[in-house]
Length: 191
Image (tube, rainbow, N blue to C red; front, side, top):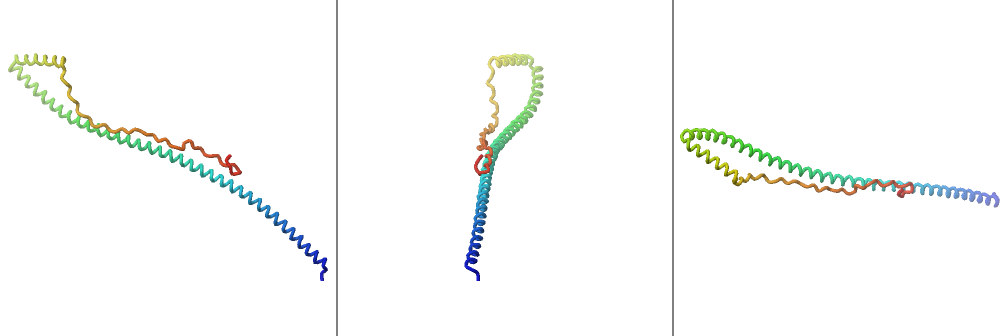
């Protein structure tokens, strides 16, 4: 049977072993804690970078969105200008068509009247030479009177209504002073 000293030595040896193991466990826990603190710092830094990245992305997308809105305002203005140009072209086409029809009719009438007048004048001068002289004198008096006191001018035909001309109301986009934020430093805060 073992002596009391042997049992005490065995108990002391076990206690020493427990102390060594407890110290090793405490050291391992300390190392794990240090690693967790380091890992937590890195996660915080990563979180800071992600937050800054999302803020940059949001600001950049907002600036792009505002530019797109300004482009849409410009496109709408150009569309309205194109509508006005088409209206003007249609009015011009109507006017030119009317002028062409009237001019064609007028030329035919003028040619017919010129032939008739030449014929009538020739007949009248042969039949009534004195009356032809009176007619020439009366024509000269009327020409002098027209130079002295011209008749009221005829009112021109009305033109088509003016086409609406759109005015540009430029859109001033917000967020154009945007610049990306600086990435956070290694501690997670801004630089």
